[in-house]
Picture 1 (cartoon, rainbow, N blue to C red):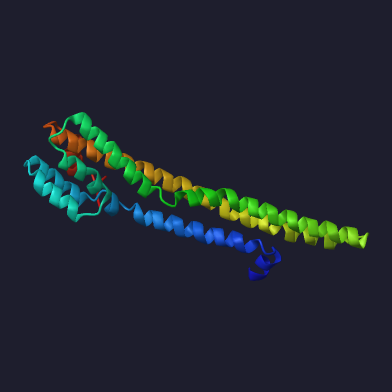
Picture 2 (picture 1 turned 90 degrees about the horizontal axis):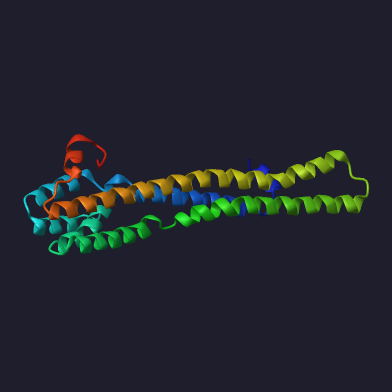
Length: 216
């Protein structure tokens, strides 16, 4: 394998570097977006129970103890519990927007690698073909076997570039989907908290009791 990579020329190493970076970003985002860090079930059960008992002060203390994303969503709503519903909605949107910035951190790196890797591969191939044609011009009568061997070597970087780009694209789409679902989930939690502060019924209570969708 090492011999195969060395045949591809110097541009092989930037492509391999892209693969390492893409894998690191993907794993880091998966760890960050795990359910226990976004919306842990145990926290939500305790929070809903406190709101049922109208213990907003205790709910604030509970949210301060947890670093989950839903805590950052709920906390400003509890602090402004006496304000109008429209104001609470605005606070919710601001909090979700702040969390979106945290969720999307480094994700553009995956998108960039998806675009750059095949271009690096193509560049390596073009450089390799230039070398082949330079040899043709110098020799005047190149051997077919030598010519095909040079083209084979030139194509290595294109193969590597696509090999890195395709998984990176899949990783980017998957992480983006996880981010969208996580943001929708914490926004739903915030909306439910607003409903409870206003004395309205919320489906979140029954969801916590009958499903495992918000489990840690």
